[in-house]
Image: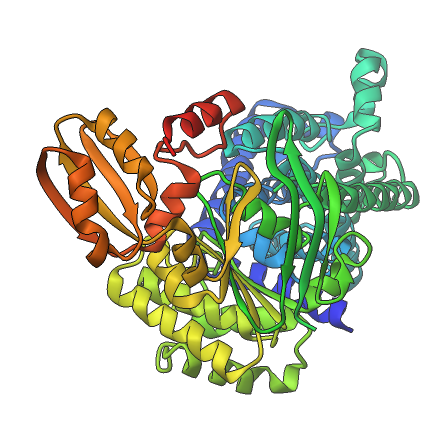
Length: 261
Length: 324
């Protein structure tokens, strides 16, 4: 019971802080809009969408990818707060509480996941108005949230793990960028992965070991149910993402247990 | 029970020994001071006792629980006020305390009344719902003091509770601490390098330097050990004067600082003529009562410390610089 209350307290703190820092909210909505409207329209205007995308406009095609992108970046950079909290004494206040390190990790993780979920909700709502052809039903939305949630858990854990090992914010940003940019570009957010099988098999192989690929795959097929967009299959997507979640939650707990202050 | 016992508690950071084979016995309900220069190992000791840092060797029992075997049990019985601000400045005072209550297992139904009592104790009533960033440094300290007590710990650690505060606020915090001890039976472990603070608050204190205890007793006993009041004299030939003064029975200690002598003299009123006679030609003199400052300087030397503890070579230099 105490652990649950503690978990709730850590989560509540993150959510309260999130809603009091408006700049974070605004900044993180602007970037996806730029990607969708400028890059999406721009590239869409110069390619023939009937050929590879079953007539789906390019900006619509990348919409699921941009949702994924938002979760990728938002979640992983959340780990930066751990670096800051450790530099000042704030984290000590939490670590000195009679809570397990796994509770602390889980609370922080859920806090970051909540931030990401609020962010994507705004983009999903915007998508509803900008792209009326997307498949928005109760069932599809629940599936989208499920996959985004799993990806958010993975990326927040990853951010917290890196954050628990880094002494400086600069170092954190550097390492995180080295991880998250390849993950983004290799996720197939901006292209169809299966077209790589013959052209560049190594890159295809890299996309297949990237958890973000499975989120893109599932969300794209859910929101745009065209046979051509089905790559790994929803069941396999779910299994892979849950596997990554379990592994990273365990690793994160270990990292918090052995974290230096 | 709010007692602390350490046995051979040691912490090494690489080659540096921050805490060296520390044996302490802190009784229930006392205010125990840990004094020492910067980098002496005070905060490291507290971090180990609060189970935030694992010792390299040795162990300790805090509130009857072993810090290695039962860290979370230890944490249930302690409260800490950290050296640096650790409250969330983007949350209100009340929110900070509420979250603390939840994390420390205070039943949700009684958290509100505890919060009111805590704000009352540190006289912050009326500011509960303001964001902490609108608080002054002193108010923030008081809030953190209130927070440290919210879950009714048996032992409270205060790491430099008045660092960087003005004299008025400092006094106020001392009064709060005294009130806490009077109202509730809380054992307090306090680190500080303000001697005035230690003298006023502590029942007993340990002076630590380079991770080791160099003196441990009540403030009065420590002052008595240094040996009477201090006569400062400017003399023409300090070396010779020191030699003469050392022969006197009433002189317990004589230290040379350039051309000035610091002489600890017992029963100064009666013995002053003897001292003057031995000192030779005197340009200037003053007499002052021994304070904990003298005790502290006596045991830790006069060098200015860097943040980290230093090596043995420097330590030896300093020890040899003091003439007895």
